[in-house]
Image 1 (cartoon, rainbow, N blue to C red):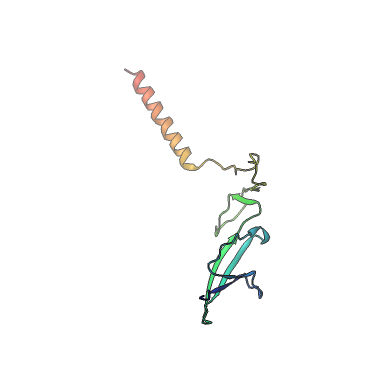
Image 2: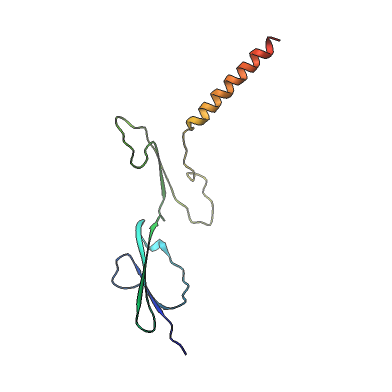
Length: 133
């Protein structure tokens, strides 16, 4: 019987692995036990001859309520008073859909205003030219 490779799974910079498995391995990784933010998933493999390989996968956990800000983007240069709209909403218990607070209200984009003004101008032109006939 041939020996199998082993893998050790680490989260972030932990000294102790969260598990040691014979390959191939399948498991459910529960991110609800981690705080929101940046993390690393590190897998160290050892083959039967003792050689090691390492794979590090960075990932972001976002289990908490989603936060949306309207009026400020990353790396914006700002001055004066900023009108901001902040919304935070959770996923609930995922057995029922929450309508209240599940969508972030947004202001109407400027291209919609421009399209509306253009359409209104065209409609006024059409009406005026039609009445003069």
